[in-house]
Each structure stands twice: as C-alpha cells, then as structure tokens.
Amino acid sequence: MPLIVWIILFCLLGGLLSVLAAALFLVLKESLRNHLLPHLVSFATGALLGAAFLGLLPHALASVNSTDTHVIPMAVLLGLLGFFLLEKLVLWRHCHADHCEVHAPDDHSRDHSTGAMILLGDGLHNFLDGILIAAAFLTDIHLGVVTSLAVAAHEIPQEVGDFAVLLHSGFSRKRAFLYNVLTSLTTVFGGVLSYFALQSMQNVLPYVLAIAASSFIYIAVADLIPTLHRRVEGRATLQQVLLIAAGILLIYSTHSTLH
Image (cartoon, rainbow, N blue to C red):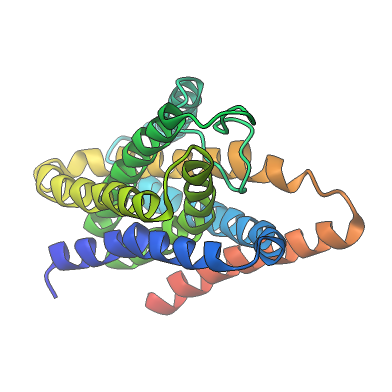
C-alpha cells in the first residue's frame, strides 16, 4: 500500500474516528461519562509517554546525522517551551472534562466566541498532529502506527471535553458535531502536506520527531497528569497507575510486534 494512503488512513484514525467516538461517548449518561473519562485520560497519558520515550525519541536519535548528541534533546526542550507559549495564547489548551475551567463561559451566559476559540485551537492542534503522523510514517511505518495510536488515545478524551464546551457555549449538538468533524479533517490536510514537503527534507525528520515527542510529553505532563492529581484516594491512584502502565504497554507491544 502506498505510504500516502497509510498516512491518510491513520490521520483519519487520529482525527475523524476520535470525533465519532467522542460523540458516541457523550450519548452516555453524565454520571457514567464522568466515571469513564478519568480512565481514558489515564490510558492516554501512558500512550503518549510510551510513544514519546519508546518510539519517537529513539528513532530521532538514531536518524540524526549530527555527531552532537545535544541536538535532539535541545529540539525537545525548544518544543516544550514552544508548546508552553502556545498554551499561553490559549490555542493549545485541552479540555478533558465536561466542564473546563479554562474555556467554559460564565455560568450565566453562553458565549459563542469561546466555542470559536476551541475550534481554532482544535484545528491547529489537529493540523500539527497530521504533520507528526506523516513525519513518523516517513521515518518508519511501524513508528507511524504507534504515533497514530497515541494520537487517537489522546484525541478521544480531548474531543469529549471540546464537544462538551461547545455545547455549553450554545452550539447545538448537530453544529458541534459538524464543526468538530471539519476541524478533525485538518489532521489529514497536515499529513498530506507534510508528506510532500518532508520527502525532500529527510534531514529535517529527526527534528520533527523530536518536536512530536515534546508535544506528547507536554500534553501528558501539563494537561493530563494535573487532572489525574484531582483524585488522591488510594484506589483511584492505583487505577491511574495501572491504566498509565496499560497505555505504555500498548505502545511497547505494538512497536515490538510490528518490528
């Protein structure tokens, strides 16, 4: 199968299918949804960290042509700082609950501008996901699959949160779903554009992989883990550790099996 087809299919997996899963998830009763969502966040945390440290970074380090061992760690560091600045601009902030303290409008009003900001940030995030997926596939098909799985694992709880914020902002379910589908397609656009752009810039790929790793690490550490710390009881902590380990194990076993 041509590489471009792999990229398009897995960009759809990370984008469109995540929106569909999130929409189905929101059909559940709120009590059940609130019970399941933290488990999805825990699993996504493990998948993102596993993909960053077991997939992306080893490939980036192995692919770089420079003899300077500091270039990839420096790229990761710059990536973390860059995503911090994006979050400061409220373009990268993720919601992983029905009520997001960052994006939620005032309790007494419904603000469509909040929804527009969510869609703008989601479109940018999905476009960058497409770039990362394409870069991973151009490096190694197996790495592309692992990266796409990590993206999909994170996208589902994120889309649930974004979907809920759109509803709280006054969007109807139909409009919220339609706009989420449209923004998810930017993943495919980013993937296809990067496929053609990066083929002639193979020397750039290790640094793109490093930025991908930094984005996964930043999302896990800055966005996901703080939400897990809201539950401090022993049973919840054990569940979180087990689900994080399950996410890491999925990435490790998938990468090992494909190789």
